[in-house]
Image (cartoon, rainbow, N blue to C red; front, side):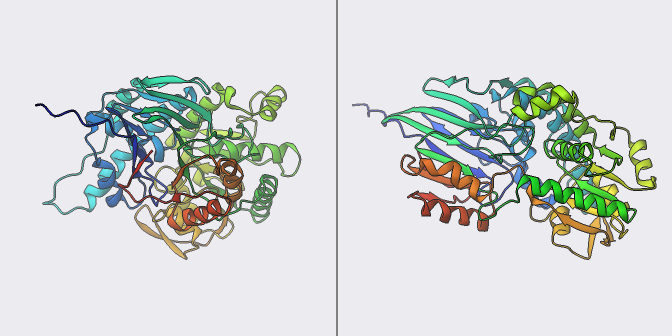
Length: 472
């Protein structure tokens, strides 16, 4: 007699990325005979470690049926072209703004992959095999053709027994919290993946939408235990930093993520100048990717909050006022380093690991008149983190560089919810959500959020290890 088939298994989630760290977001959801990835981001850190972690997937790429993407930051979407190169053939679901921003982000990521491979090959012994980039522009093109845009609030059927809805996460233009409804052998199961949660009250974007009850909540924990400054205080501090730098004849150099943070900083500077709190000062955005991303922001005003939409009626272009110049060519960028007089230079990458910001730091770090303004999270083992740690000397473009410029950290510009924001958002779910797994946070931060959630009534909260699986 033939054996009866085994009963269908309950849905499971395996945590492959952003587990006890911040970058490389990637979680594998298996339900019935379908396997779905929630995000497919790049792990960021030391080049050699990052290359190996990102190159090799811990599963057969051809077994993945679909990807559901929370937003367009590279630590969430940046390894998608590598997934496609290695055999993934399914659809990638995201919001319209995320699809548009991903085209910008992934094109730039392909260039950085080539630069990183060249750097590592230069350091390798002659007899060692050459390292190839993780992906190239052709892989990016193939990835973009797989992206299917779905608007906030529109429930769609990914496959039989799998329904997905995007809600506004308020973190980045197009960012989404992902709500999944799964039909398992023992009935319906609900999984929510927060992606990155934004801060209530930040300019430009709407606040994060409330999260409904679920069986498994996969939540970010970037700023567990930390309280951000109020947005207005941060804007005032930004003004103070720029003012005192102007007074000593220096320039403010701001490493900023090309997508999201650059537009927020430009918005704040525009408000400070318009209100008379800052004198008119030249502002240079020296990042072709940021320039392209700003065009995407202009095209997707459906993501803006009511205050920003009202301002648009008065100032039709919040990102292109007369004081802001968008630098495109390498020649213009080189001339900018030779420019005399105070100014603000905003350039990428935000963690100072690549891009034109490295040349601005090389020329600016040694001048005590200047200010390096750190306006975003800096991961371990990045140049940005070493600047935050106030090291007297850092290596820039392979050479030692003394740090004589003032280094100022403004965490209040973060687009991530802080500890209190997370507790207020998740608190109403304490009695109705079975399990919470915290990702996208360094262990110390995540542990503090675990403690905070348990104090307000959550029973099953933990921080998964990489490769750990939980049953929904």
